[in-house]
Length: 476
Image 1: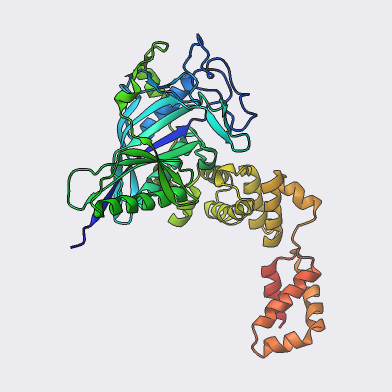
Image 2: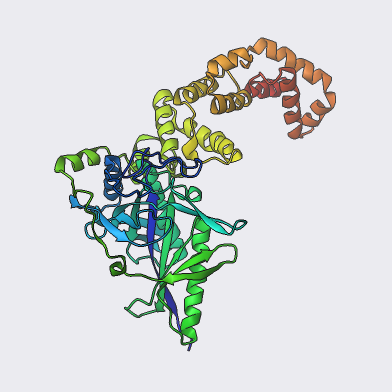
């Protein structure tokens, strides 16, 4: 009889926080930069250099904890995790083991079989390590300490996920919450969000967990999905052959779609954790916690609810507009100015998304000024410019932040709605195209489109197409 297996997955997600400076020193956290230029004695682990905690790191960690329904440890502290590795300059990493800042939370995801809550075991603060660069040519390894000391939070989930789809839904939700908070840009390609996957398989119906492996080196959602499928198949094959799964850390190679063992999995005691003697415990007062709670932005779920009440726009629009807080903010500000939410939504979902896609940019990078978009909508709605001109103006305010009224004036885009002048042009188009007139009268609707086109051409695109259509039908 064939055995059925169930996959059990838990994630450790590392998120680089959006602070200007590192967690324990004043060095820049900017991505890029020539190797070892964003460094000082503290983040390079020089003897005698002392760490000083960045307050903003604690506030971001609290904000993420509150947004993921965690309890906040108002008394927490840092511990040293001791291990020797060239990218780890002090030979220990400052992290939190015994008293992490957040614990026992969870977020709700949508799955194929409905809503499901994925538990969050804890969130702790820690410093990032440096980066090793392997030089094949010189056959040596170089180390860049720019990333060393960049603040991270590690979000440790419960083993509540059962397949790749649930994992991706959880990561998407987490990324959206963190971006809404402004706590990180969560760019997987720049390493500001990284996920390690803990995975085991067990026979359906058993209570005990199987032996788990941890997979590292996953820097895109696609790679994560492939790694889950690959590791699941590898473990089932071992069990089917009567072999044992070894608890170890594996490195996923996305090109070969295979994972390789890196090292046997250490337990906490292997790292000889102890409280960091250079850092005082963090005491979070009720006032401080309250202040952070009061500053929490409205998250997506609350926005969706409010949009249904306040704006008369379809649910589909609301879903797309709220995927990025930036887009939602621009939508709300523009709608407040011009009082036409559906029109604002049409422009953002149509032209704005099209232009962003053309430039391979995310909605978070949209910089269009609400005042300009509102003005463009007023110009279009009042018939001062037609739809063709409006698209041209939109591209202009999208790329160059030009004032729409100014642009319309300079480029003479005002629609000609003087009926008398238009009627004369229509008459001449009709007398120049007797064949199309005959076709239309013979029942060919298509001929009208041609005549509208000819009229617009003579008017250099500045006529109101609705009026052209009406006059043509009237004269025909």
